[in-house]
Length: 163
Image 1: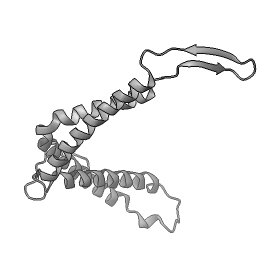
Image 2 (image 1 turned 180 degrees about the horizontal axis):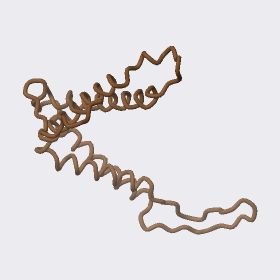
Image 3 (image 1 turned 180 degrees about the vertical axis):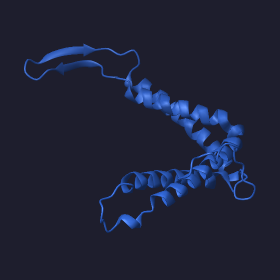
């Protein structure tokens, strides 16, 4: 399986697990004589949940192993995105600004890094993010992981208690 498909499958499994957890939480308790009580077999849902968790853990392990080659890029892109978000939140208000509603008091704001410089830094980081993302996308579309044939699963995966 190509890595990009594995990443999509991981997202699907995470959604399936969330859905199953919600169903178990909501449908475990029901009123006596309820007409819909037998539509949700909670022990069966729990077994399905455990299978999905096992599958997700194995898939995450396989994805992690495949990503070793580009792990530095993944960490770098994450930090660059965090810097972009950070700089987009930095105040660049400068000049005279009216404060308050009634008396017209003004405050003169100064900045050390102005809006143009901030925007330039953000743009430069975005260029780096885009380049790294292109490398990661190429890697994801060209890299195979052992999934579906000989699945790599860590040893302690199947140790959940079954009801």
